[in-house]
Length: 303
Ligand code: CP
Image (tube, rainbow, N blue to C red; front, side):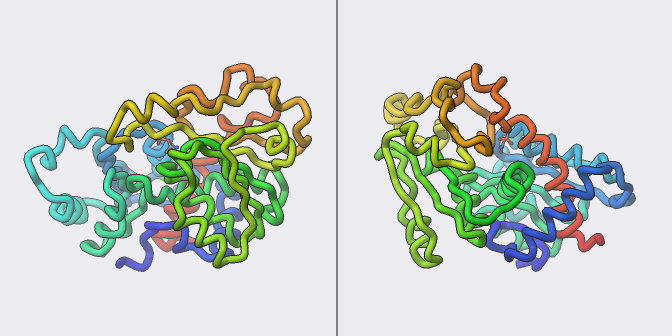
């Protein structure tokens, strides 16, 4: 694997995460820094995206780099049967950095093994979404003033939600208590519970999204039920609206509570929450530009 690729948030130590937060803060003060002049960055999106692709492209543009790529694999030669390996080797002829999203778990790691060009994983199936995690952690740090000892409630599709899986790993350095709220069909996989057990991280599981758990939380991390990961759409229909956060449910929540969501939302946060000062998901997405500027510089070895 190319050492400078970012395929999993586990590639970053606690020190790396704290250092990248510091770099993101510098970019937030002034995002227009011409650090990528002469560099070409490829965004290869085999799955749909709004925020991840556009915030990466904004990050590159603000740093003076050039973008090539695609947002719909149907327009590329992969639709004629070209393999991922060949696509990655071709794009490596053209670009200094490859940012890719793919529906197959492990696709980014595989890509990093067939090229010397740094790969950034912009989401691989239900597995990992490490750059989302960096912006989530940056958002948590900005809103809480610390990453340590927080009560973090994750709600919704904890089985297929790759942002949840990455965030558990990324926050594991900072002594969190996790509250996992999910229906039986979408419970957090044993892999992540075993990970918490090994690291001595406390967690609790619930099927009810109760005011008790809301009122204990410093962060509520809402997630969408991932329709695209279901093989049986009847199963999706059963759980799609299982939890809806409404403003009235926040009356007795902590002052420092912030509500995050990786977005897109479908129906899990009612629109009446948007005007509550504890709603942070729009600013969270904006933080993605600064966190991704920091990551791009890190993988390219730019100080
Ligand atoms: N959070 C996230 O990955 O959003 P997009 O799917 O729009 O990129």
